[in-house]
Length: 245
Image: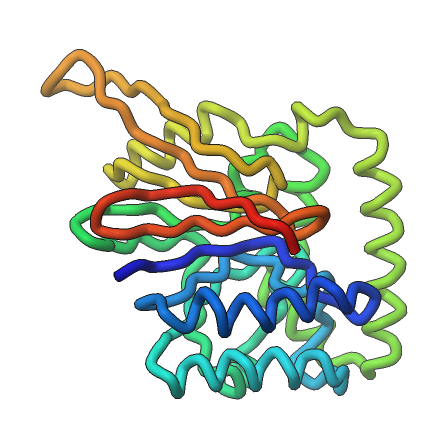
């Protein structure tokens, strides 16, 4: 009895070894779980559900097969694949969740999110995020011909890579006060997220009115680059597991 969380796989045709590892992971690990949660950036880029890329059909088929075998999949959008829509969700049998979602698993109340909204010190990124998450702008972008969307996405990706190379690691990490605010806002004992590519489990001490200190936890998923990671939640533990691809 367990629930599995992953994030930041960045699947793409340029990284076939990661794609193959993900397919094996679904059958060897997830098939025996109660459910799978993908906390964003499943794909490296996403410019619309109408993208004919065969990899997308392969992934949708694998997730649909998982669903048919009794393992539901839930998805929170990341900063790379925030345009995944209802059509792909229906094709893959994924359930799309809000950007911040509370779940109760085996008696624990847990806050789930991609993690980019916690990186408030990166002012330029937060400004960009507000623009691209505007529903009007998204509808206009998806209305454009596919080849034009692709060109725009590649230009934006190139600019993002250049911009990130000039930023400090501190700016691109979570803001600790933003983490505390989220934990207190939702009254949870656990937070699970990805985005920062810094896998770890952090303990945080919060002052509360009923007692001097309350210890809560923030579990961070790593990216599937040189190794993979998942978080496994069971009735007994919440465990960060790192493993070779």
